[in-house]
Length: 335
Image (tube, rainbow, N blue to C red; front, top):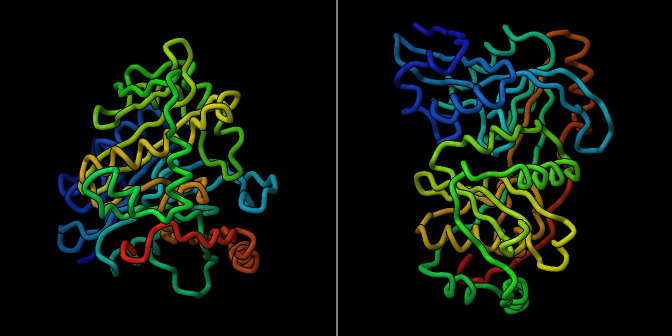
């Protein structure tokens, strides 16, 4: 017998939730953190078959610009099925047919505008609005060490990486715990957020400072000032870029952003991760370092029949349309 259940907080999730989850961001440890430091009316849905958990979803509420991908101010309070921070993981998971059943259930019980983000499977073209969202950039790690990665790049891209990472006695790269996160670093995150064309939620200082110990902070500094930083996560066979911040005044001088991006790749190689997930923004520089776009999708619904038809009609305005640069940074044998 198929049953659906709504759960109000992650402390009440069933014990088998984490076993069904596809990645760290869907698991209770991270969901507890997000609930505490980024509260946005999180709730959770489960689908069980004779008591066995077969699909699950993470849902939250937020006011976002509906037409964000065409840069039109259009704030709408919506229900989002996704991870309550800007990562590429989808918010619904489990058995394929059970995922579809749970999705329909959520559309029935949640009122207003409902958006499923970062779906890995393209939605069937039907009565709902759907389309592409921001791709995530993935680098397949075929390399035993950094030098092998450099050798695998085509000459012009290898030269570019060498220029980015040329010796600079003024710079230091240091690994720290996220508990060492400072207000200066948070201001750099806010600068990145302000410049983002595809804004989702703005996270708090405490969200970063209190991240679980699995997350690692790398800072770029000169002993006096911090020029930039990033936070990464190693989980299963993937090394994730999570978030970062930049002092834009010094970025042009030191290539801080690209140097820090290089450290993500270098660290992922050293940790023997099968894949390095470079995230959903700044596709071009990430692809020039060998990453490939992984297409993700969104699907939208409104419980008002007229508005649902309108959203379907306007679905081309909701989706991400930018075509990635035709970058082929790796030599053929690596591909």
